[in-house]
Image (spheres, rainbow, N blue to C red):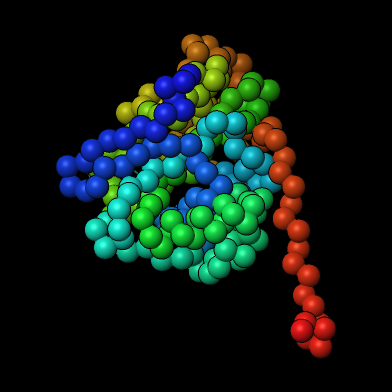
Length: 244
Ligand SMILES: CC(C)(COP(=O)(O)OP(=O)(O)OC[C@H]1O[C@@H](n2cnc3c(N)ncnc32)[C@H](O)[C@@H]1OP(=O)(O)O)[C@@H](O)C(=O)NCCC(=O)NCCS
């Protein structure tokens, strides 16, 4: 358990070393930008997002992959997501992150974003009920396209699954490509009787039992069960003549 709290660092043959660590509130700006780049700005319409809306990720099960160094020495370019231009904007525009971040964290995130620490990967796990059986839903997993095929995705997956196991969870479910997730043991063996709150391809609904038999009897709708997060407060627009 203690080992999982430590940052895991891996050397890559072609790029700067990357580290896997617990996601921080200050990751919000770079994480939203990464997800926009990987999944497009319509990503909030995806079926799996219905299991994340208004919920917090499972405790201790949200991870970031980062590389350190001046941006000039780090491969690729990084741009702000279209919806986020300032730290204040990011507070209100961070989708499943729900905008609940203290100013200091947002300032640190913006500083990291421009300077030394670059977020190159993200992975979260969420509490769900799989037709009455407690499980975790994995996603989104995303790696910056200039840092792909370097093992970042694999290291994030292995780290997250080890953490889920260490926390005593029985099963992880996801919607994704079997040729990629099969290498971590995911298959559609236990998901044939499960459904999602929206359109999905059944062959992409995959599961991994961390504890053998934990998905026995799992049938029906997968539903969110994670802690609810407060909705971000709407910004009040002041009449022009009062805004001094
Ligand atoms: C999928 C993703 C996370 C992999 O990250 P990564 O850091 O490149 O992964 P790794 O370096 O650990 O592994 C790369 C290997 O996975 C393979 N791979 C990547 N995506 C794959 C897919 N969809 N299907 C099958 N294999 C895939 C690569 O071809 C590569 O194979 P190789 O090892 O034989 O060269 C990354 O490509 C990504 O962010 N894609 C866009 C978002 C996405 O699709 N997320 C997953 C949602 S289903």
